[in-house]
Length: 128
Image (cartoon, rainbow, N blue to C red; front, side, top):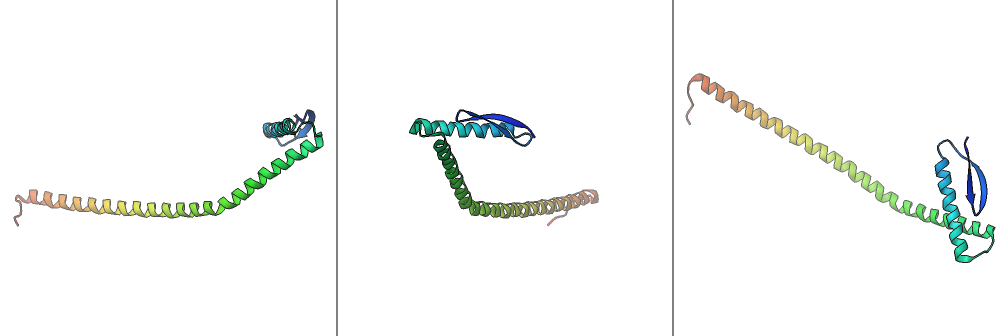
């Protein structure tokens, strides 16, 4: 299991992660460090623990908002997925109808062609 070193709030932490997750963990640590830095510049030196808790609460708030938004969007997504299935079914039915119409037209054309060829080989053009 790989280990990386990250710096958060001026302190180094050795972190273990899954293979291939090193860059992600580094980005997450950088994001947390930036949030703590922004809080420090906004509120001053109010203590490392308090800054860390405030950053964690800000992240928890964002996560909560995203979860709520996701819950609001899930029914809309389900509706859109259902509409997509219906649309695909209609498109398939339309395609089948177009194919059937083209096949029927081709058969009529072949029938007319056979009759014309028969007329030419019989030596005359029927009247009326």
